[in-house]
Length: 468
Image (cartoon, rainbow, N blue to C red; front, side):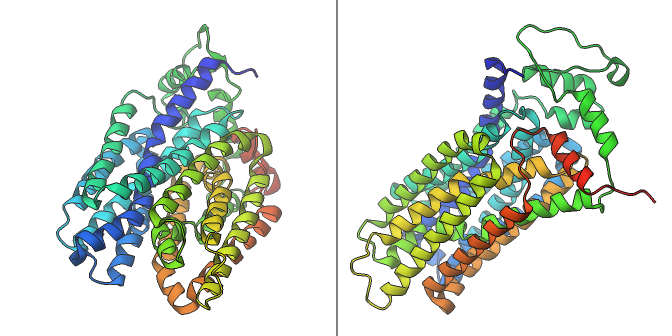
């Protein structure tokens, strides 16, 4: 099927608008790296101990875990678009609360609520984009949220290099407000509308996206009219509903639990790679490494490389597929973590005098490798592998696992570094990256270019459900 320019533009526009939610997630992730040094310099009473610092840095994923669990029922009842809308006032209020927090406990509570909003946005924005995109460009369009997340981290690094932490927080509040305005002009997910029996609205949503539905009159109660410039869509509503009726299975069946387990595993591997230890503690890592490059300049460079690598991944994902990029990503992430650990091992023994740029090079390789694979593909797979019938529920649970593991990684990094040394902590992350490559190679199916129904049918045929 040949895609029209208008269809591609509409779907890219929708994806970019929804992805502002991921840009705000990037701001949450990147905030503490420049904000913690600013807090220590300007408001030391708000960071009375290293334990307070670890809670300020690590609490958003814990809040996101709870937000993700709430997201499932919200998407089930209101749809992904309106769920995104619900997150925006929470985000705005939380950022303002951060800026005016009088104690470190209030700051932790405010960061918790930014995380809660993250938990709502994380599954809903990705599923919204997947539902509204054609299979031929789903990889490219589905990578846009990750690109905007990388942009959000870079914005936090740049703004944080010259703004005090309070001003940085207030600046971050502007982005969810923009998201709120844009969502008012976008349609609801056609997949969710069809699942709820709103066939006329689902047809209107597809037409807005320039995806012409071929709706069966007896099934939908309406006859589809010809529309100039609207592209024929293979994933038509009538076929979607028939496919789901044919391959629907109980929640406890293998054809549901196996793809769910694959999604959970790849989302957990994304976090135990150590990515958020790098993102949340980038400035601190450069300060402790004795890098010859200024820590803020190095941090901005890391964020910039992540953004560029994520842009490149958009053009690679539908060409090479999901598995090759994940394997490449995991392998080079492992090598980068080995390099970073080796530097710290030699540094504490006074043998790293000639290796001043190794921390920067290692982090650049790590972040670039992460960006071409593990940054976006796990979330794309969440929108592709999970069965359509249970996707709202399972995506929220999957997101909870992802965010829970993020909290554990960020909270334990300082303690892990104290017990094992920074070298030991980075070597453990390197091992996790290598294990993820083994998992991807042997267990993960390729989904490039396949419709959501084709992917679901793969698990149905592989794990047929036997009725009692």
